Image (cartoon, rainbow, N blue to C red; front, side, top):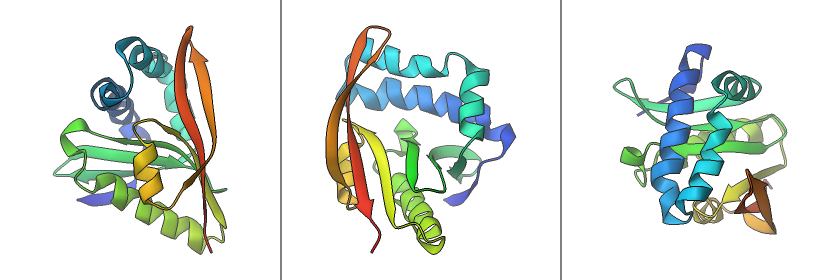
Length: 154
């Protein structure tokens, strides 16, 4: 598995993986209506691509196949963490997170934070994050639970 920063030409693949991960892996904790509302964020592919372009994105590949990606900001905000269903639970998210955490720590960031889905919460807890708040979002009239989480870097 190789890790590298995403390039503009990767954006269509990142969007496709985002939708597939929600559709397949999201089924563990969210119903069909919730997954559809969540993944609709990518319906405007240009707008969603601009969102991805506004952050750093580290991706994992193997033999040209996209395994996952982690979008983050220089202030320690982890905004996107998605793995391909075929690569789930194979260390992809851990490798991505470890690299981004090391990069941000070296840059002097003192705390990481995210808004984790029901699916992602156990992963982030295993990385040392703690829930600071539970919230319910509404998208297209559908409610989605998620968790604000923080991890101090001491």
